[in-house]
Amino acid sequence: MNAVLKPQSTACPLINDAFLSNPYPTYQALREAGPIHWSDEFFGGAWLLTDHADVEMVLRDPRFSAQRTGAWVKDREESPGELGEFQRLFARALLFLDAPDHPRIRKVLQVGFKPDVIQKLTPHIEQTITHLLDQAEAADSFDFIEQVARPLPVHVMTRLMGIEHTQVNDFMVWSDDLAAFIGTPLPTRAQARRAQTSLVAMGEFFDDLLEHKRQKPGDDLTTRLQQAEAAGEIQGGPELLAQCAMLLFAGHETTRHLLGSGLQALLTHPEQWRRLKQEPTLLPGAVREFLRFDSPVQYTGRRVVTDLVLHGQLLRRGDLVLPLIGAANRDPARYTQPDTLDIARNEGSSLAFGSGPHVCIGAAITRLEAEMVFGQLLQRWPDLHLRSTEPQWGRNPAYRGLTSLPLRQPLTMLTTHYSSKDYPTDLRRVVVENNAACEGHLLHLSR
Image (cartoon, rainbow, N blue to C red; front, side, top):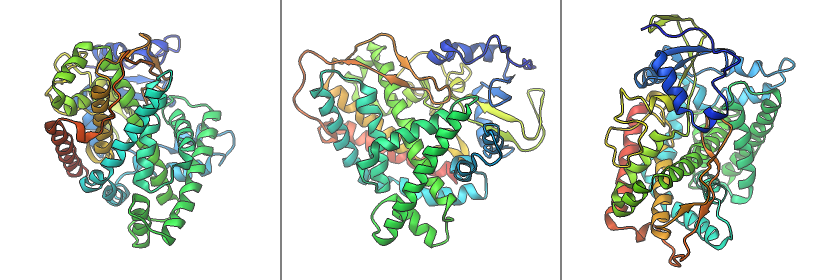
């Protein structure tokens, strides 16, 4: 079947208020019109793919390159080299690399996400969640995004990387600036300049931290990266700094949006909330369903390496292709009743964390954080409700998430504070074993 090839009319852009609130009707309309579309709205022109099979193929196929930052950055410059410092770091991040650099660097980073490392991190995640929920319980108002979903991933990543918590707020601001640039179809020069300022600030921070770890090594990922540099496994300077900065960014963006969107989905489907209370061993599968149902990353990008034909259309070398992950995860050819939230769904993992060589390196930690947050919420406040029926979605079409999620606390609050040791024994076992198994699967995919 031939695709609809005409560029989207500027009078009817894809990205509008309705799309940002709910992109899934737009994805459905695109899918029904054909499997491939050209749109001028994204980065000056890109091919859009909606079908699960096509999206997964592009993410795995070496004919589609992850190296895509050069023209993207230059198009935002007012004068040559204006964003040179940004590009120097940005282009070296794992997210934008192909072989042979990608597998070499991923192998170095993978040591920080092994099951034994995650196991050691688990008590800190428990304590942090308990502390954040204690603070929320004591406050007059309870905005889940601001008080839990936004700070938690930064606290976890800073612990993983051996960073003191004094700059948590800076990290969140820096991450927001990067997300605004990366996730906007046509970022403004002002957004590009803010992103450069924040990325350079992150690079300078990690430059100082790496020097500190040389003098006083610790049991953390930054120390391991410094030692890998000394062993010649990763290059110092931009290559090393880029990985540090993007790890912190990626760990923050994906997890906070999963937490917010997942809780919002649960509370707007009360039958699913009740079932999860009754069957807590469904929690790991429920988190996988939240990732599929409302993916934190809605699309990613690839550049065509060599001319090829896809669905009868000629894609030329250098063309940008956008695999629409959010659309693929609602593809009825892959999932039964894809627009239905079903925490007991048993149809395999979604593409929320990608697929192939670039599958998310921190997926197991993200899932573990979500399982622990929802586990504590269910035990602490089993009758939790939304305070507003109008969700406040962000304006970023690539990184879909809520900016606010006000919750109505039950009239009678439980005073006992929970940690994972209070979970039913079978739930504790499922959480730990599920994440170890999934991490092993991701390690297999990354080879």
